[in-house]
Image 1 (tube, rainbow, N blue to C red):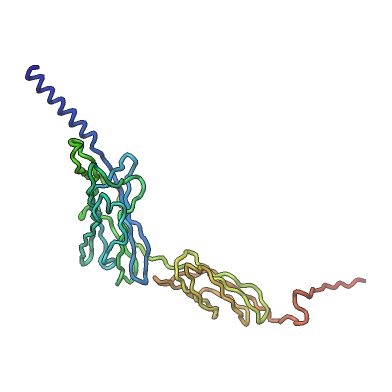
Image 2: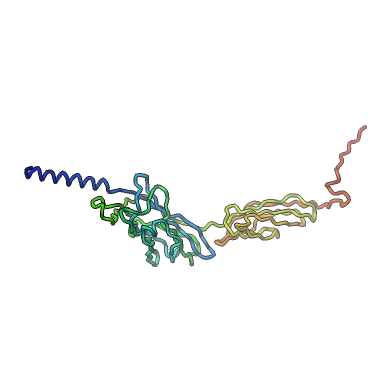
Length: 302
């Protein structure tokens, strides 16, 4: 074999190997969203979860190393801590870390994922939303209780990589990583706590000295909800165990009851509905109760 053929052969082999290696290198694309969780006004805290998914089945990948960057107004949120860590922490991953930078007007944090797996091992990022982590923030000093939180694309930059085996050296157990294309990043804005909503019903016609029922029912399952009724109708507190309560009243005269106020842990709620009780001023004849006496209609015949 002459020198020219030998050189051509090696060029051909190198080209085939290069194309093969590139074909084995996976690609991916992801999107991230922030999901508001529980708001505990009694403890001045709110929970927000970070979730990730692949934009399509073809872009699914194994999570490699990642830094999820979040920014938020310092006068709304502070002191972030992990409430829970998702599937990209432990096992093939280091314990998920949290880096915080407190600022005067804007603060930032980074959720840090480190893949320690070999030969591309780790948890998938597929088309289903997967929880990266849930964070608890303090809202102390935030009089409005509302907040905004941004998943940052630039400055600071969110970076996600995939993990995959080394196609050039299958015996090398260390995984390779490659940055994944960034898709939509869905942030949160003007997130405010939900206050209780209660509706009032009941009422009817009673005789003087009789009783009637007023029924208060939660409309959005936000508890506790303290309800104060008008016209001395009384007060009741609705809870998850008792989302509906009944008060018995005996008004001396016809009265229309409404909800005067609804109060929850995060502030004033809303009350709707009414209960009108008509009081019959003529007391019943004790010798002829309605259950025994039948009214008669007379007609004079000529």
